[in-house]
Amino acid sequence: MKKRVSFVLALLVMLAAGCGRAAATRYQAQFLQLFDTVTTIVGYADTEAQFREISDQIRKQLEQYHQLYDIYHDYEGVNNIKTINDNAGIAPVAVDQRIIDLLLFARDIHGQTGGKVNVAMGSVLSLWHDYREAGTEDPAEAELPPMELLQGAAGHTSIEAVLIDEEASTVYLTDPAMSLDVGAMAKGYAVEQIARQLESEGVQSLLLSVGGNVRAIGGKILNQDNQEFYWTIGIQNPDKTSDQAELFALMIEGLSVVSSGVYERYYTVNDIRYHHIIDPETLMPAGRFAQVTLICPDSGLADALSTYIFSLPAEEGQRLIESMDGVEACWVDSEGTVLYSSGFQDYIKEK
Amino acid sequence: MKFAGKRDIVIIAILVLAAILSWVLYTDILGKKGTYAEIYYRSERVKTVALTPGREESFSIPQEPDVVFRLYEDGSIAFVRSDCPDQVCVHSGKLSLAGQQAACLPNLVYVKIVSDKADPDAPDLYI
Image (cartoon, rainbow over all chains, first blue to last red):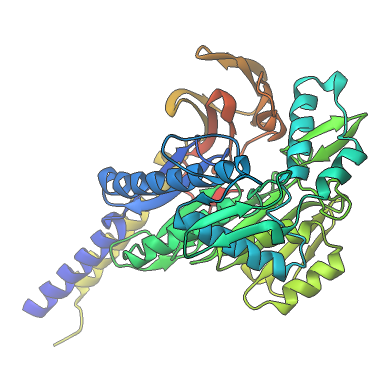
């Protein structure tokens, strides 16, 4: 009889646990002030205070990276990328180790991509930036930057002219007409560094997104039994006129997903759209794709690669992705045709 | 001794039924309410709009009258006008799925789509 009672009791406990297990609550925080985009943090925690503690810590760290990697603004007591640009041809600038590390990473990427991802292209990108802003503000007067101006600027984009002195922790641009623009990788790189820091501190589950740069720490842990589930990342349809808002959803654990599209940051000149991803060879917006999505463990690499394969012909991009371990990609061309690398579809959630 | 007697089986059956019933009640009746757009200004939630299909109207928030939203008949919402220099908010297009978000950064206006349907399969985030 005793056994029977305990059996029924055990069953009761199991059922109660099944219905009302102390499931962690989903929390989400977002900030608008960093990296000129929306930062989102998603996590499951027992209390809001627990989640707040970690999201505040991330915000503080991201803010430091944002200030260091900013090319448009000055911050009191901070030497940042803008300070380096302002001192081009004048003097080396003493900078934080996080700037040195980013620029060493950028030099690496420059080598790996045959110069197609080049942080020294600031002179060209700033021309496009200025014409785009002016043309968005006053569409009737929108113009393209004149090719001779672009070509003139392209003469001042040599990565060799970026002198990094690791020992002195200084950076010096030897060409006074050049400038750095780290937009193609700074967000992803910062996200990766922060995620690694959190992982080393024992954080097991979190989703961090800065703009289109998503980095998952572990899977999502909904219950106290530490069982992990995949994070699901929806990829939006680049065709904003379509009834189908979602292209597909990706299921990831501890990986990064980066999606680059041309449908948000663009301006129109004579009824033609000109977006913000500039091909370093033609000095014009890369015209082949509407969207490129990358999956790989390192968010910095994913960010840089997404920019790179945006300006590569599909076959060349596919060859590159297939040659890299643990990297998958998906291309959507301007007609809406979707192309996948060999392992990409394994991450797509079945409907 | 038998593994479980008749009385136990009845108790188990009742418990299982009760569990199923409460689960159905929870997900079907309490869980299905709908999808909403939450609008934030300077990180404060200032408006929540039900994304109910069939209704079409434009509105703005008092804190930022130069940013105009439109609710569409298909149950979606979009930024349709803003005085910002980049128009990224307007280019973001219609939003309708829980987890989608868009922002007008220069004006510090942010909208996210939320749902109180208990759907564990919905994406955690859209990019």
